[in-house]
Structures are given as C-alpha cells and as structure tokens.
Image 1: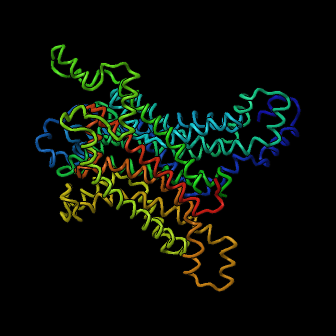
Image 2: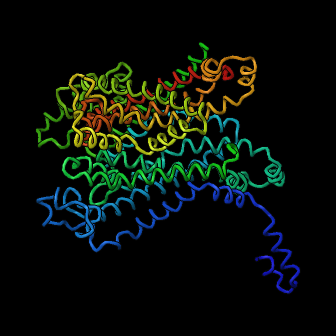
Image 3: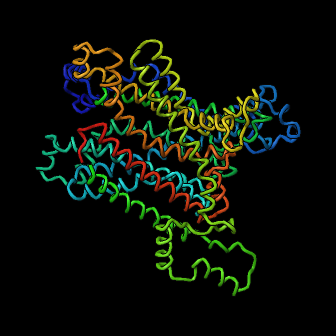
Amino acid sequence: MFFSDKHAGMGELADTLAEDAYTEGRSLWRDARRRFMGHRAAVASLVVLVLLLLFSAFGQFLSPLDNESIDWASLPNLDEDGVPSLASQHYFGLDPIGRDLYQRTVQGSRISLMVGVLGALTAVVIGTLYGAISGYVGGRTDAIMMRTLEVLSAFPFMFLVIVLMAVFGRNVLLIFVAIGAVSWLNMARIVRGQTLSLKRKEYIEAAMSVGVHPLLIVLRHIVPNVLGVVIVYATLLVPEMILFESFISFLGLGVSEPYTSWGALISEGADAMWTAPWTLIFPMLMLVLTLFCFNFLGDGLRDALDPKDR
Amino acid sequence: MFSFIIRRLAVAVPTILTLITVSFVLMHAAPGGPFTNERNVPEAVMENIEAKYNLDKPLWQQYLIYVGNVAQGDLGPSFRYKDFTVNELIESSFPRSAYIGAWSFLFVVVFGVGLGVVAALKQNRWPDYTVMTAAMIGVVFPNFVMAPLLVLLFAVTLRWLPAGGWEGGQVEYIVLPIIAMATSYIAQVARITRSSMIETLRSPFIRTARAKGIPRHKIVLRHALKPALIPVVSYLGPAFVGIITGSVIIDQVFSTGGIGQHFVNGAINRDYSLILGVTILVGVLTIVFNAAVDILYTWLDPRVRY
C-alpha cells in the first residue's frame, strides 16, 4: 500500500482504513476487468493469443531444425516424404522448396503479429492525437482537419500501398509505415467524436480556467479518458492490419525472402496445394485462429470498456 | 436534395484531383525512368522516345498534360505492353471483374440482409445461433484464404468445378470466385443487420404497430426493415471497396483475366502508367459509389438533412 508506506508510523488503524478504502473503491478499470472476465469466449481468446505470441517468440526452440536449411533427401519426392509427421521432426511438413514448414510458420507468425501490433500502434498514436486535437480545438481547424480526413478516406489505399511497394521496392519497414499511416482514419474519427463530448465536462473547464496549455489538456485529460474506446478499436485494428499485410504478401508484393509472413506462406501453399495441401492448411489455420481470437477479444473488450453498447 | 448532390460532387472533384496528383508524384518519384532498363539505345533514339511520352518537357507541363489526358479519360500508353494503351488493357479486363463483382455484391446484400433478419426474428433460438456461428466463421475467412481453400476442396479434391479460367463467364467458372469474394462480406452484413434489426424491433413505433394488430411480416417488411438497413447501407461503402480490392485476389487465384491480374503484373513489372491508371479508375469508382451511398442514406433516414 503506497499510503501506509508514506506514513509508516501511523499505526495499524491507518493501514486497515487504507486497505478498506482500496478494496471498496471500484474504479472504472476494475469494473471493466470484472465485466471482461465474465465474457468467457473473450478470456479464452486472450489465453490463445498469449499462447500464439509465445509460439511466435519461442516456438523455434521446440524443434531441432531451422528455417533455412533445405531437406535435400526429401525434396525429390516432396508430396510423400514432405508430409507432416512427428517422426521426421517436420511437424508441419516441408514447404514447397524443402524447408521445414514448422520453423517457417514460426518465423511468419512473428512478422505477421509484429506488423499487426506495430501497425495498430501507429494508427492509435496518429489517430488519437489527430482526433483529439481536431475535436478539442474545434472551429475552422476542426473543419479543415475533418475535410482532409474525408478526402483521404475516399482513397483506395490498398492500391496506393501496392503502388508504393512497386515504386520504392519491397521492404518490411515500408509495409509497417504504409499500413499504419493509412489505417488511422477511423480511429481519428472515433476519438474526435468522444473528444467533442468530453470537451464540455467540468474537469476540462477547470483545467482551462486555471490556464493549462491546450496541448497539455489534450494529452493529460482528453487522451486518458478516450483510452477505453481506443483500446477496443485498437484490438479490432490488429487483425485488420494482419489481414492487410497478408493480402499484400499473398500477391507477392509484401515481405520478401528470406522473411516470410502468413500471407506469403498461404500464397506459397496455394501454389503447391495440388500435391502438398499441408503447405496451405497450416499457415491458414494460424491466420484464421488469430483472426477468430482477436474478434472475440474485441467483442469482450467492447462489452467491458465501451459505455455506449452496455 | 439536388443541392446536396451538387455539393457531394463538389467534394469529389478535389479528391480525384488529389488522387491524380499523388499518382503523378509517385510515378516520377520512382527510381529510374520507365526506359532505363532498355538496352543501350543511341542518344537520338532515347530522345525520340522521351519526346513521344512527353518526358522531355518540364515537370509542371508533364503534370498538366497528364491531368488533361486523365480528365478526357485517356490514361496514356502502357510502359510494358508496348502495343497497348492503358485504356485498352482496362477495357479488355474490367468487364470481367465488374461481372464477378456485381454478382458478389448482389449476393452480399440479399443473403447478408436475409440471414441477418432471420437471425434477429429468431433471436436466441437455433436459427439465430446457426446464422451467427456461420457468420463468425465467415468473418475470419478473408477472400485470399477462402479462394485457395475452395479450389482445394471443389477443384483439387472433389473435382466438381474448374480451378480457374473464364470461358466467357460460364456459371461453373464464376461460382467459386463469387463465393470466395462474397463470404466474409455476407457474414459482416448479416451481423450488422441482426443487431440493428433487434434494436429496431424494440423501438416504440414497432410496439405501436403491434398494438394496432398489424401482422408480424408486415411490421418487419414495412416498418422495421427500412430503419434497420441504415447501418447496413453505411457498411456497403467499405464493402464495395473491399470487393473491388478483393478482385485483385480473385483474378490472381482463379486466373479470370480480370483487371486485378493486370494490376499485380503491372506492380511486379513496374508498369507505372498501368497501375496508376487502375488506381485512378478504382479511386473514381470508390468516390462515385460513396456519393451514391450518401444519397441513398438520405432516402432511408429522413432525419439526415444536408
């Protein structure tokens, strides 16, 4: 208890009082956690997602093989020797050019999840700041910022990102930036809406009246209060980002060898599925499972954090 | 209403202009000109080529020429397919994509709304659970997963349907593309329709209608459906964009010879004029469709005034 630490000599009474106050007070976040825990599918999804994260981080140590070397002995007869089996230690079989698909999948998961999380994070940062500033400042600034948003959201971004890839070459970093930069539009709109309603609250007026700098009001008072909604939409953004990246990689325009992602693996599998269907199935299951979990997690978080749908 | 349509179009013009500008800037920011990969050609020939494509003029003149051409519907020559203009490539492939896309869109609206309404009317009973489970599964199967999976199932394993091709758009050639394209959007629309229908059915004016003794099917069709469709219509904009984008995948997997194949090949071959032409076309379509959705909105929801 930080309270009792500060006043170390105050005796037991203060201690118990502090503790009571702590257990009885039900903060917004505690409430939210309780509601979230009641949503069983969401909790299960969270567990699976943590496992997936661990898989992508440490999965490579579960198999003695690596993701680069080619199994020359099995290569000539891939559709029979390359099948998934525990005995050959190729848990997921071989990929179309004879590498261990399990290790490739681990590698692909790492990149896909990273793209998803970093992309969503970029979108959250840009979108939240843009929306909060636009909503808080209001007036002509707001009108211009929203008009810009309108123009931008009419863009066919998937096409533009592919054009970017073609023009500047394929590059994982560029994928991050491109995905993050184009996906903040909805986030900005949501945050702006929330900010407009927060702006008239008393504590914001209080901050204004004592002359807090507007930027500080946005960062210290507005942003923390829209965080609940932001978290919900960020959770739904992650699978969207993963899909976006997989889409581009599926077309052969995303990550390039030696890196890979779920989309790239699915694309390789789709080419090889006539003789080696497992090359399609395993990466596909990973992707579908992830999307499934993020969807449920998003639902659960929305129930817990978004006051609108309660 | 009329002034709203005018104003809506007034917003569309700068958007399209921005799109063309961005396209132009990208095309010229590209490392290496479109002809740097050619074998060593004599200086004079190079000059002629550049003159033919207006590359010898100052940049601002090139920009004005480009904007002028695009405004007249001329997207320029393809840099790779030397004998074709971008317009010709688009004319030969776009109808196929549009055909598949239009059918998919129809299926999305009909099945999505239909299933959503059924689920809402039978809330918390088995039809609801079946539809919602199917929708949940449908949502997580994006088109680039669905397409190879369908081929694996119906072409490789069962051998019921061809794995790809066009053949004049015969039914057996377009069934799988349409299913692959429409599944996840049907699922989304069903989910949206269900929740908005449930909300609408709880509202006071529906209670009034029931109190007056109007039969249930009439309440649903006459009173509840129209307001329940408002969130669906606002989703149709993104769904339309998704279907256009998805056609890139569909054309690629099923080799339908649609516009997506040209787009991806153009991106891989760095055929800038082709990919930018396609991007502009898609952009214009998106903007026009979004405007149409907004207009539909005012009809569905009389409270929306512009």
